[in-house]
Length: 252
Image (cartoon, rainbow, N blue to C red; front, side):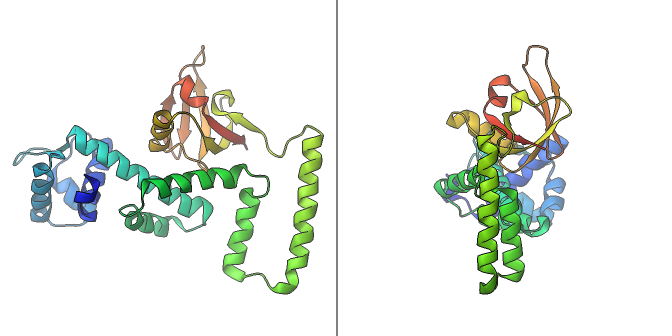
């Protein structure tokens, strides 16, 4: 089905999903305002999507996604969120540009490449040879470059840093304190380093914005540890214990 949809159609599905989460009831004028288009343009597109069984809409009535349309919209939204996070968290692109670029990229990227981006982001935050300081160095390299005469200095600094990390590991201190999200104490914050679990569970977490690099704050843990209440990117989420067990965070 995805191959039959144009980029504009995918934008409409994503916009309807976003408005539905925000307003519950979505009207044609809401879509027109969100996408910056005229009402007749929206009406025409809704007809095309309705013919494909992706939206439910009658004249003068509110707009809703069909089950098939909602599934597609969720996948489009997931692609957008992952791409935006990668551009911001890993490449250091500013938020506005990351939003615009993610909008363009989401229509063409394959599921396989998207999954590799997710795994690469996890690797960047988990591998002792990389991490946030490594990303800061990349930002410096992007802006200033690295003159050849400074290479030896950087190599020495890297070796010294690596030796400190190895010593810390040998002393049992660890390079960074990584815990399962379920074990993060209320009021504590962390940065997500990895999202694991079976494909369905992992996809659900990523769809909710629980992605590597994102900041998370533990708000409340139920008496028996299920569910746990967290805040991610300003959104309140309630996660089952089995979900929180598959999310790893670096305490900050």
